[in-house]
Image (cartoon, rainbow, N blue to C red; front, side, top):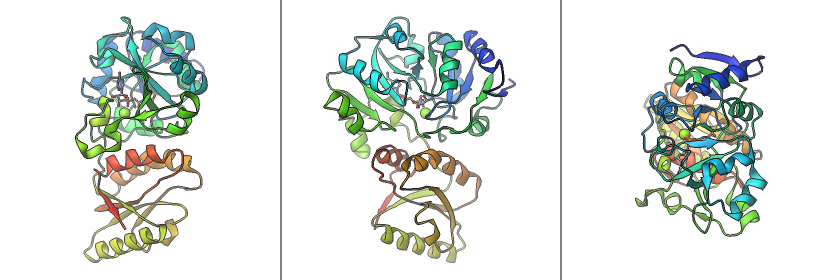
Length: 345
Ligand code: TXA
Ligand code: MG
């Protein structure tokens, strides 16, 4: 298959994307979180193509993306007052909510579940593509299953060239981590995946908000309520460890690991905040962003992990990034990539 790569600003590109989606094809498009791999959510055969292109396990459900509030009731049932409040405050935006599904949503889209995940993204190109494609677009992150989510069209092309019909290039994603997922099918809203919208922000709108126990104690063996969260997700080619402690202690420890590694001829990678990147002696240091601007850290995390896969390093040490709003999301993804290897110093 030939994959057409188009700038989303090209006249007619959105219309062409819509036509591909309407006939059951696959189009990758930018959203404010990460690039999505879109297909018609109401067509089980189109959804099946997503699983094939990504190599995704078929029990891992897709998020249905909509562009208009009034379309929610076509795919979701028993929409609570709290869900309406959250939609009013955070849609369009990086929030996904889980509802009971209507009969219009095929099980091929929900991985066999009776619930459906729905999100209305904020990105203008995303909204236009959803509308042009018929209004209901299933879109997981546009990476090969097991790789970091793509935050640029180039990342999408690395994984999907030749496997999908079209990639719309709308520039780098602004947030860089996937949406916050909240289960609204029970009495108390429950976070299944942390994202840009924090627990605190949700509480301000609906009061009590729980967090899926499987997220809090990830190695407890509790089964996560979002099937996708049970997968290791992504492991860099080089072993990754997170070093946690006071800023000075972390720099001291990582400098020692660099020295020890380099003595035995190893190449050591470091993931650092801009504030401390200059304090490392040797090693291959990648600056991820500024702690003072946590969005810059979120935005570059997946890209830096992809870059380290290209470079031949033997080990990677990362600082921890417990930032105020997005820290839970950043650390959730980083800890998964590290296979839970955290060194406390
Ligand atoms: O920011 C995002 O949400 C991006 C962009 C493209 O919109 N999409 C995304 O999709 O991250 P994906 O497929 O990579 O992740 C969807 C997650 C998976 O962990 C999946 O298991 C969970 O949502 N999920 C989907 N439907 C669900 C359901 N009915 N119940 C529980 N979890 C669900
Ligand atoms: Mg994904």
